[in-house]
Length: 260
Image 1: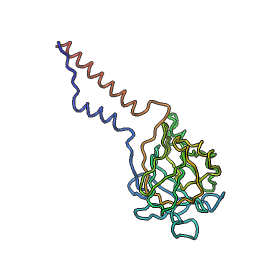
Image 2: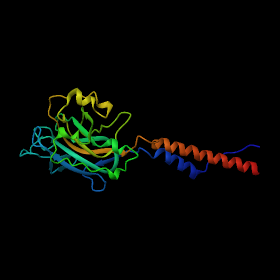
Image 3: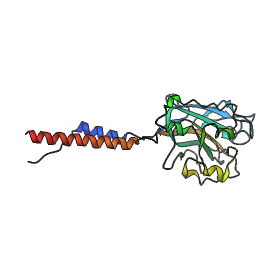
Image 4: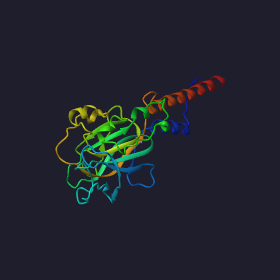
């Protein structure tokens, strides 16, 4: 007797969705009013000074800029590291992997950037409820203090071009967090080879700082859902569930063949 194994279309669709759904990336324009992402501006007033909240200006088609001092002309109306060092605090409202940053305007200037994540080891720990992780308070802190207060250097990134997404937080183990700091290159009181070697993103450890000042209007980011490191990954879980469903189909068909 020939036993036929049949997989119904609804079940096949379920299996496909289970395997394909995790890790889908999304892109958000930073001034979007429909995405959950919120953006706030911060700046110090010079080398070693503390951070203060600063107003942001949206330049249509280019992105967010900031004026920390009295000079609002080009290129100082972008986020820059000329004197005052300016940054954006991103809050996704849930554990998230930041995957890419797009700068919509450089004005022909250098535009290296620095990316930090808030307590990624906590967000990646399945035993910790992300809702229990306190939000960061960076006002009144210096940039050099942040790495000792829960922030992790994800990486420094160069070679950025206008309107071309720059991949960040790469490597085999990208980190997850709800809160991210993105800014024009900032050596965070260290810099050089030491800072590069401490990057969470192994692909960013080859970054070499230069003497050029950096300017950029930050336009959008790409991101995907956060992951944990102490349980089976979502793609692997989906595959295991799919195999179980296939096994159930085969068991049912064998049982029906015996009863016929």
